[in-house]
Image (tube, rainbow, N blue to C red; front, top):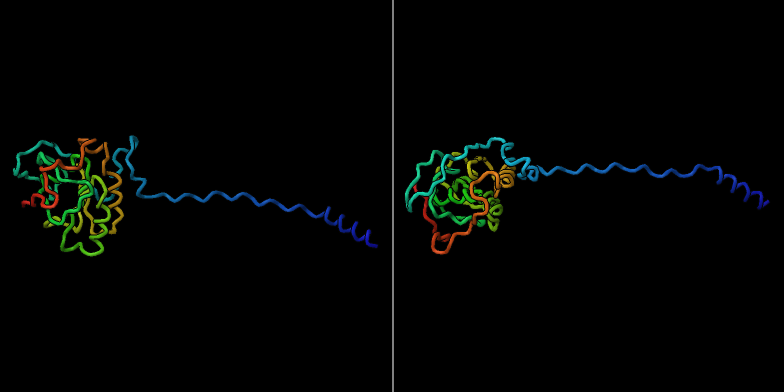
Length: 209
């Protein structure tokens, strides 16, 4: 009797359908980093053109002016034009006071991004978030700026963007698109470190209205 039951079990198992292998799952789509998509390339030399609200106005001149000579810029803060022969330090430099425009513009010519803010409207965590984006990061600088039309204004050579909040995602897009973008500024390879004795980072030339 046992061998009959065993034979039945073998027959039943033999007739059972083989288990089906699980179907391969389609790979999960990779999330697109909206900031990375603003990385400049030969095919897309100025991704900042896709940033909503950006103003692009390449300067007509980039000549040096004499020490202490004031340039009549058509915009405040300026995003290019004639400037002092000495550039402001822009090696991730955070300035606690407003700095003379003519030095800051020279740094833009070297490929830096300059973030300015209204000290009355940008404080606390908002200001710290700007500091964190700049401090220790080459070719960036941050300073307060008098009488800004918006709480925050960003400048690179020939480019300007104003925003109302330090949380605005366009800030990081601007930095990615224009900091050291070799296609958008006149002097690729120029340094952001000022030569000794030419510019005092701790006591920079003050803003002159």
